[in-house]
Each structure stands twice: as C-alpha cells, then as structure tokens.
Length: 330
View 1: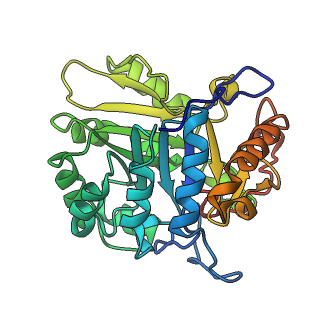
View 2: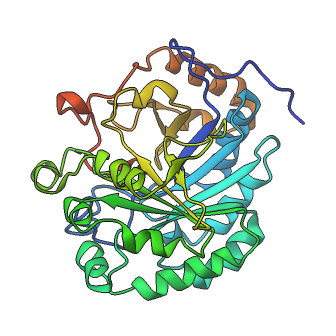
C-alpha cells in the first residue's frame, strides 16, 4: 500500500477528504433547471478512460481523500461504468465509493454496480408527484426511479440518499409529502437550493426559493439537526423520532457555506475545478497517461490548491465558468 502523504489543505486551513469525479457530460434527462433542451454535443466525447480514472484516484488517495463520488451528466450512460466503479473501489485508501444518478437505469443495473464495489448512492428525484416529475425531467419515469430506490434500500449499499432541487413551487406546497416518504424508509432526502449558472439566469429568477423555507418548516414540525461526519458533504440533515429517514438542506447562499468545504472536483475531461462555480481549472489529464507521473500529478494538485478562493461568487451573481451543472457534476 502506498504510504500516506501530507493531507491536502488550502490557504484557509480547509482539509480535503472528498473527490467528486464527473465521468460524462451526457445526460438523458431534460431537467428544467439544468438542460431544458436536453444534452447537446459541443465537441468530441473524449471523456476520461478507466485507466486514467484509476491513476487519478490512486494519486488523490495517499493525500487523504478516502471518498470518491462519481457524477455526470448521468454516469449510467457509460457502458464501462462498472469498470470505473471497480477502479475507484479497489484503490488502497478509498473507503467510500459513491455515485449520484437520476435513477434511469438503477433497478436494472444496481446489482452490477454494487458487485463492482459501489457503497453509497444518491438518486435525484425533484418531485414525488408523477406529473410534476415529468414536467421537471421530461420523462414519465417516477415510479421506475422509486422502485430503484426501494431496491437500493434493500441492497448491500451502506447509504441511500435522495437529492431534490428546491424550487419555489415545491416550497409553496410544503414538505409533508417528503417527510411521509421518509417515515418508514431509512433514506435521507436533501433539498438543494437552486443555484445560478451561466445558462439559467431567467429560470433562477423565476424559481429560486431560499433554503430558509425548508429549515423553518422542519423546525416548526419538530425536526432537529443531526450530528455531522468528517467527510460529510455540505448538507445539514434533520431527524425526527417518528421517522426512519432524514431531511437535509444544502444551502449555498447561506452565510459561511464555504467555510467547511472539503471536496475537490475533476471534470469528465480531466480538469480539476477548485470550486463548482470557479473559473477555468487545472488540466490533470496529461499526467494521467502513465503510472510514473504520479508524483508530478500530486505536485500539480497541491500547487493548484494555493489558488482556491475562500468562497464562491454566487452572491455577486457570478457563476464562474459553470454554464450548467452537467459540465461539472454539481
């Protein structure tokens, strides 16, 4: 096993334990807040290959990153996804191999993914109403996705979570349907505050709702904040004695949101992004072609962290280079 190296930290003493790795920009949903016209190819689909991904994860792991999340686009559009999962899961030092999916192929592919080493799963479901789900995603597949979630809960996965983008229309009807969803299911539903990207300015202005709407509703209905783990993401989760599951909130516009940042991102084309809403990034791909470049790769990663800013620019209406979330993986 490779000897541990000095942990990855930035100039604000934040320690990075968590890598979000996009494996594709392609998505088969047409979500209103992300790709309302569907995915449109803008160049060759030359995304990271399994060998490159294996070298990338092997470089990060000795520097203290024990959690990898595969994102997209939609990861399951890749035919070699199980191989990618296995590359991450078998890397010494990686304790959690996670994935975020829209659930399109979940019920059909779950056994293959868990067999490859997947340990944690997030499923995106923005509405529990069939018509509402179709209106947001462009597909009438809510029941199939929910069947996949229930199959995942019955599987060997250590954790199953649901992500729901918080929209004004969701906030207006309240969250009772969601709390009922988690009454018997040991699943965490996390509402993600709608974020401004380069392509969604008009949609954001029409549909954004403050994360305070979730927080205030939960507090009024007896939900209490849960304890956080060292490698947890930005969600603040709430528990209730009458419910098996949890309700969470990811509120990027809240004060201090970036103070506890613990993740780094790499795009499907091999660029490391220091922030979801940052500019440019650092190209790692040239150093992913040979195992012998690992030391230089790790040096490039450390040097890049010196340029990480204290916070994003969303409060200044600046989404950086992120045109839509499918390009970075959210």
